[in-house]
Image 1 (tube, protein in one colour):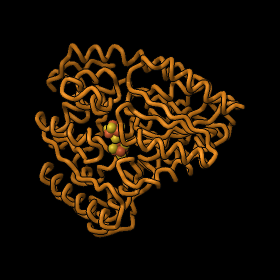
Image 2 (cartoon, rainbow, N blue to C red):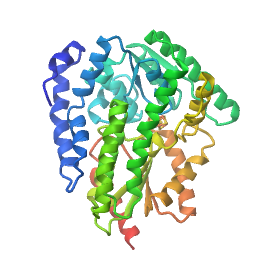
Image 3 (cartoon, rainbow, N blue to C red):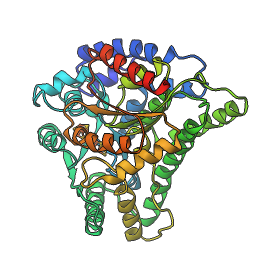
Length: 424
Ligand code: BJ8
């Protein structure tokens, strides 16, 4: 990585501690990613973006801020990025996926809090992530209890705006979410000083849909009998989608897909023909959490999809682009976002239908339902998911883990045993 110490220092970061993170990340990335054989050349861009994760994009954000652009840090895929971009702001996903930040979060949160929340809060409090230092405002949401309470702690540090997400999907809930999007628009206009117009919202709906379309195109390659790209690489791209410039991201992902088209024509795949195909379901895998993909793929299986927020849930549905009035677009946004099936909703049987459909579409041999420790929502819903899959005759393995590597050996054993069952 180039030297960004001056920028980090100006951002008030703890340089000494942050240097420790900069030392371990390249090693981890090398072990998990660069050790793969036969990767598409188009991965070079994504390798670069991750290698420079705390440099290149933060530098762009700082530059944009100098020109008066406001940066909105978000933590959940229900927060509509379209609204932020329509007002000339930049939205960037902030969920923390490294154990490095967890102890910082545990200074203020109970240890029995999910690692994603602890890492996110720790990254801010310990001043060891430039994205958390750059954000002008954080946008939280009322999804799980841990997050709801974490916002109150974060608010002692920096401005936080919380979107009130309904927890059911009746028509009046969708109307309530449309109202919530309207209120968010007013907040975004206040922070940026810019008015959102029908034209600017239509343009940002197209911008974010284009990013989703590029991801859909990428994930379609994983449905093929001989995928030309690994699950690990697709996970990395999905993680980068949260913070990269959306237009450039779509362009680079489409460029990669052009190469993948050619690979398919040439019969180039990355897995052994005997590789068992695994679909992950469950909690998100925020960057740089590559743990489960690495375990599964180094056991010789293929991860062909993720029913997670760092996977299909992120890009599955598009916003209707045919609306011309602001109200029509807000309704279209509300409908699209309320179509995401997170375990914070009750009932949430549509999520189980999604998983079964993805098993068919991605030709998965089995599902690994993954739960981040202390995520009660997905843990409890895991019971229903596993039962429904078993009833449908789909092999399923439920696993719980966190960002520590201490359980890697045990997880490897359980994954290996599951793959054996699939092979017989
Ligand atoms: S839409 S999954 S991004 S809420 S893992 S913090 S739920 S205790 S991340 Fe999420 Fe939005 Fe849902 Fe997706 Fe809480 Fe669970 Fe932790 Fe979670």
